Length: 93
Image 1 (cartoon, rainbow, N blue to C red):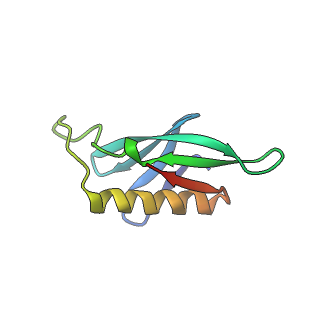
Image 2: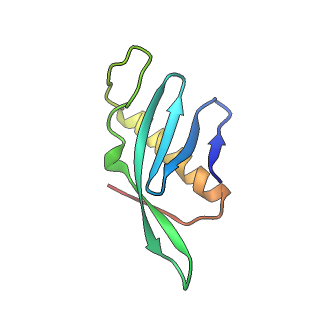
């Protein structure tokens, strides 16, 4: 799965091997992802929540801090994203 769009119009998509982009309206944030071994040839993902701090882009070009409620919403959508592709996911600070 490369991109998932949610009912509210927000989306998650892969940018490169270690980066996801969460977008909503005109704002987005890049999220760092690492890998961990699950089985012989399978890997799960480790989402680094410390990378979810500030919006990277906004309509007016300014950066804005992501509050705790929005951060939790993004984390829950990341879990749905991985669940939809049957990929194990660990959330870490």
